[in-house]
Length: 240
Image (cartoon, rainbow, N blue to C red; front, side, top):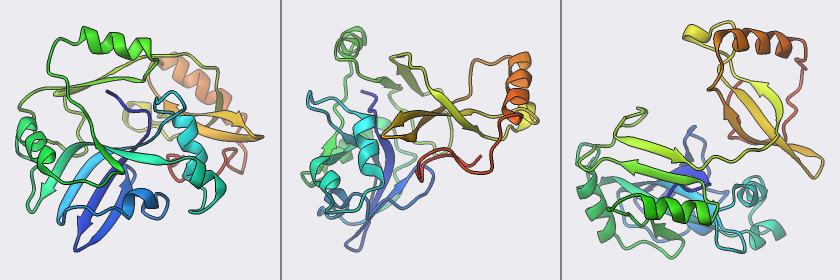
């Protein structure tokens, strides 16, 4: 399954556990129910921090309400999170070059705390799990080629996201600088939704634009630039 949460690398060394986001931000203090767990020593885990709604489905909106609150607050006590682990990158030594099946075998051997769940893998025809995704309105699936290695920072064709697309009308609150063929236009649009009179960042979209649309949208954006960020504080917002 594709989990609707925040990507996280967990490192356990000499009895100390640290959590880092995909952007490299330290999230250890933000999720103490995970970082305080007793993890095996000298391991690095790749996974997703998720919050489940009343129906047991991952909810990014619910997770957002936890992202910037202090431990011990009413929100932190009400919204509990889990760490869904889907890969093992280090176990005494680097496992990056090992095939997927071997990394998963070693992951299954680890004694992990109750705050962690090892993602269940499905090795059969994909239609039944896709029907499960659509029936329960989940985010999608991730297909991984057997035998594939772990390639940090690379969009490998061995791993493919198959998203269950949903439509939402969102606010464009910013944009990232374009590079390469998009230099002079923009890389992606930063989107937000209003909640409690705050514009909460919900994601970015950078695909589906032809050259004419890129230029026209950038011209419109330049007319609306403001000096302050319109989004509520969120360390995961990309640099603009």
